[in-house]
Length: 253
Image (cartoon, rainbow, N blue to C red; front, side, top):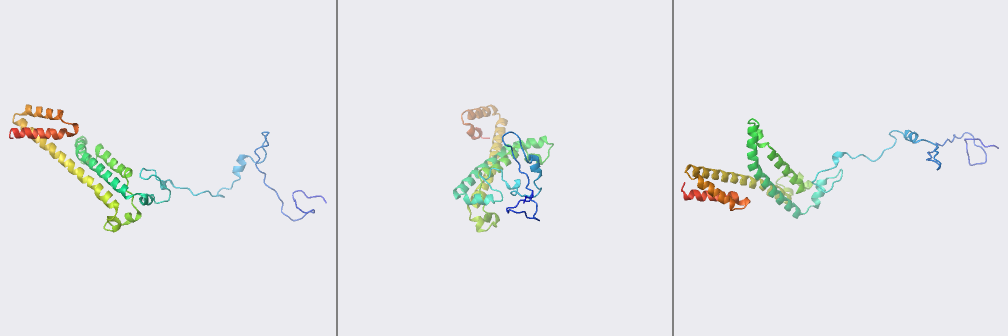
């Protein structure tokens, strides 16, 4: 009995009523002769159902940390908590003292150099009050303070972040004393240093003015010149101040 095309069957006879078997042609990249048969690449792409398949879920860029605070980060993880669990007590204290030194320095510069630049900025802006403190020096120092938090980080566990200030999860931790107490003392030290510096400058100006008024301008200029020449750059102001003080005592002003 002849076979019916399009209806293959494994039996010797012919079955009737079966669905027709029409396999889709496969893509054949070629037989080595450069001749290709079957579906083209465009036809293969076009045959993919839209929305029929799903890949891995996308990761939002907001979940990826790109700053300098952490050595590594993972999406959808509490990176601060992971870093806090790995940070040693020694590292916390070392970073706290580093930021103490940094904040003392930046506060001192803001109170001295920043003040001088602020006065010029204030005058140049037409006496706008905000221009006194919102000047290039202070902005740069503020940015430096922010960078120190990343370069010398104190990582906080979730329990520390959620704790009340009087809780043992706060006041009995290394972060409280090294990052909140020691570091912030740097602002006080810097402010006192700037105040002392301005007081010394004003006193020196006052002594110089009295010496000049007493007719001792030449002696004053000579004493200042000798003090500058005989001292290191970092000690010159103190040497000048002492020279003026000694000169004023000699003439009993």
